[in-house]
Image (tube, rainbow over all chains, first blue to last red; front, side, top):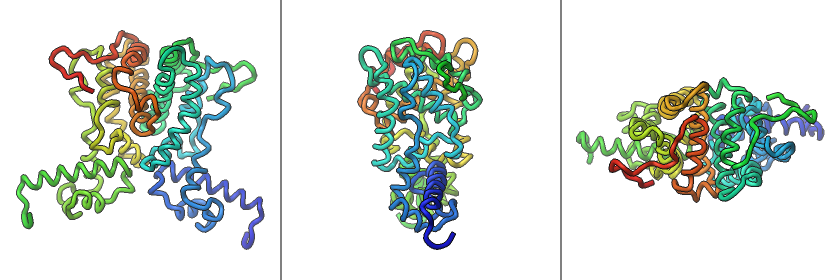
Length: 204
Length: 204
C-alpha cells in the first residue's frame, strides 16, 4: 500500500477519515479535535487530511454535512411530516456519531460564528421551512421554529443528557404526544405515526 | 494587594474567577478551557485557582452550579409553572454566560460522563420533577420530559442557533403556544403567562 495510492484506495481512506473525524468532532467539539488525532484514529498520516480536505475547517464541514433531513423528509403524506422528522431526529441510529445526535457536534463547536451560521441555515432550510409551509394562520415562522425546537430538545435530552423516560421511549410511545403538540402548534390535524402503506419501512 | 489577602478580598477574587470561568466554559467547553486562561481573564495568578477551588473540575462544577431553576420555580400558581420556566429558561439575561444558555456550557463538555450525569440530575431534579407532579394520567414522567425538552430546545434555538423568529420573539409572543403545548402535554389547563398579582415582577 506504499507509494501512489489508487483512486479507489484514496476514496476508501477519505471515507474512513470522514468517519473518524465525525466521531471526534461529535465527542470533543471543533477546537479540542486536532487533525493529528483524526489521522491517528484512521491509521493514516496527518498530511493525507490536508491533501484530501485542504484544512481542518473543510474536514469539519464535510464530516458534519451528512446530517439528517434533506429531500426524504418531504416525501410522504404532509400530515405525517412531524412524525417523520421525529423518527429521523430522535430515533435514528447515531452510532457513526458515537451514539449522540450530530447536532451536538455542531453545538460543541458553535462558539465559532461560521459554525453557528451553518447550524442556523441547516435547521432553517430543512425543518423550519417544511413546517412553516404546513402551519396555518399567523406566526407560521415562529410556530415552525417552536416545533423544530421541540424535536431538537427531544433529540438532546434522549441521546446526550439521557433523561430516563425519553432514553427508554420508542417511537410508538411518543406518537400520541407528537400528534398533540404538532396539531396544536401547526393549527391543523397532524398524525403522530408514519404510515406503512406504499411499501415504506416502519422500522425506527 | 500583595501578601496574605483579607477574607473579603479573597471572596471578591473568588467571585471574579467564577464569573470568568463561567464565560470561558460556556464559550469553549470544558476541555478547551485552561485554568491559565481563566486566571488571565480574571487578572490573577493560576495558582490562586487551585488554592480556591482545588482543581479545574471543581472550578467547572462551581461555575456552572448557578444554573436557573431551584425553589423560585415552584413559588406561584401551579398553572403558571411552565410560563415561569419559559421565562427563566428562554428569556433570562444570559450576559454572564456570554449571551448563551448555560446548559450549553455543560453540553459542550458533555463528552465527560460525570458532566452528563450532572446535567441529567439537574434537569430531572428541577424541571422534570416539577412538571411530573402536575401531569395528569399515565406517562407523567415521559410527558414531563417532553415538555422539558421543548424548553431546552427553545433556549438553544433562540440563544445559540439564533433562528430568526425565536431570536426576535418576546415572552408575550410565546404565551399562546406555551398555553397550547403545556396544556396538551400535561393534560390540564395551563396558562402561557405569568400573572403580575402578589407584587411579582412581570419583567422579562
